[in-house]
Amino acid sequence: MENTRVCVIGCGYIGLPTAAVFADKGCDVLAVDINERIVDSINRGEAFFNEPGLSELIEQAVKCGRLKASTAPEPADVFIIAVPTPFKDDALKSCDLSSVLKAIESVLPCLRPGNAVIIESTMAPRSTEDYVVPLIAEAGFVIGSDVFLAHCPERVLPTNIISELVNNDRIIGGYTPACADKAAAFYRIVSKGAIFTTEAKTAEMAKCIENVFRDLNIALANELVIICDELSINCLDVISLANRHPRVNIHAPGPGVGGHCLAIDPYFVSSKAPDKANIIRLARATNESMPGFVTAKAKKLLLEQGLSISHAKVAVLGVAYKGNVDDCRESPALDVISSLQKSGSVVAVFDPRVSEYAVPLESVMQDACIAIVLTDHDEFKEDALQPYVGMMQHPLVFDTRNVVGQLDGAQVVNFGNLFSVAPAELEQAKR
Image 1: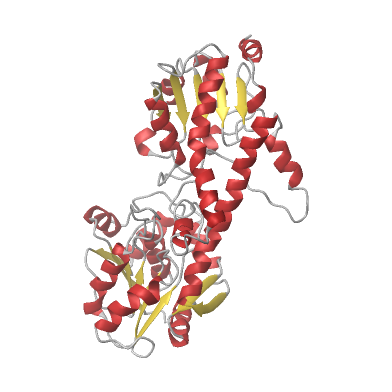
Image 2: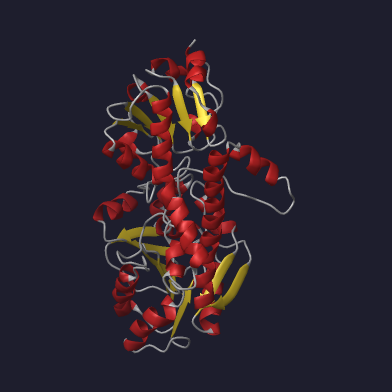
């Protein structure tokens, strides 16, 4: 299947690496996106976002003619749908399938007997059979005999996407068994991991529940932070010691949960059974409360130094939702920044991975009353902030990611020692 023609609809964080990987394996790939800037970037052989190894793959694939981009689909053997699925602005934050359905409609004129349509976009359970199947059937195709429909959810880690697209196990959810087999044969072009076939609705639920599990675990850690703060217990020590148990793996707490998966996918499940998904909704509420908790603790830390959050300069370090990426989607840092600004703070923001905030760190730290680390970038780890401590008006660092080491002349506060900070400690740090 090396000469397979592939049309990828949606060239974002998943679609573009997917297109590049299949082109690298000998497929003729058309990458389709409605954003002309993205299309032009691909046709120049460039990636428009940072991901290790991606630019090299695109450059080589374009140069050898295996990859091109367009704003409109063309006939192909396999159509991959990789468009965004945000939640709707409704009470349940249900799955917004509008981009998926528009993508399906756009390829219908290109479909021919024997083609496969594979949806990689994360969707709420039963989306394939309830919404996608009717569209294709209304166009006159018999799914499972002349057109093969499947859901194959992505499951990759930013900064390691290329490797994981090739090496991770794959779940193939076919609308029929024949659909699953057709899609599985296609993914074997690139996949070295195991391939598991199942029903589309099972694959949809499996992808969502993977992220629900992680959201629940992080919510447990974050709730533990709040409880331990109340009881004057070192939360980070508790987690470290509890994880010594061979069957316990509590995740790391933080300022909240971001990204296009963990902060969104749980709603896709809870919206389908709102009267049953009690734990899922509670975990979401816990994680969504963390930016407010961080802001409240920052205010308290400043008050303990005789300072008011109002008019104080606050250095915010990190806007991306996780370390070493440039992705700010659903980042809790944005909520912290907004809350600080509403409190009257003078907020200076630095993020070396996000172009909008890649300003000189010196200007952000100069005269700051407190620095709040919200993203675990390498640039903030261990003693990386040491050269900037002396620039601060008050050498106080609030590390919500537990990545900052000891800093000479500064008080470093994290979720382990948050309850124990006192003015005398800061004065000692100054001396």
